Image 1 (cartoon, one colour):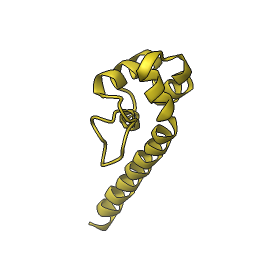
Image 2: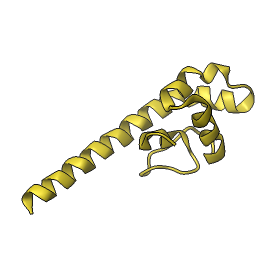
Image 3: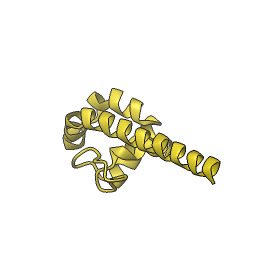
Amino acid sequence: MGCWCEAVLRNAGRVDDVAGVNKVGRKTAAGLLRINGHLDRVISNAHKVPGQVGANLRKGVEMARLSRQLVSFKDRHAAWSDLANVVAG
C-alpha cells in the first residue's frame, strides 16, 4: 500500500494514534490508494470520488495532510533515535 504514511488515510486503523479521514475505513482507503497510487493523488482527486465516501474524503482532506505530516515526523524521529542508539552503544 505504498508509503507507510499513506496509512493515515484509514480511520479504522489509526497509525501511532494519528487520526485518519473520518468515516473512511480500511477497505475504502485501500481501494482509493490502489486506484490513485498515493495519498497526494487521492487528495487531488477527492472531487472525483462520488457519493458519501467522496463527501467524507473532501471533508477530511486537511486532516489527511496533517496526519501524514505527523506520521512522517514520527518516522524521522524514530530513525534518528535508532541511529543515536547505534552510535551510542
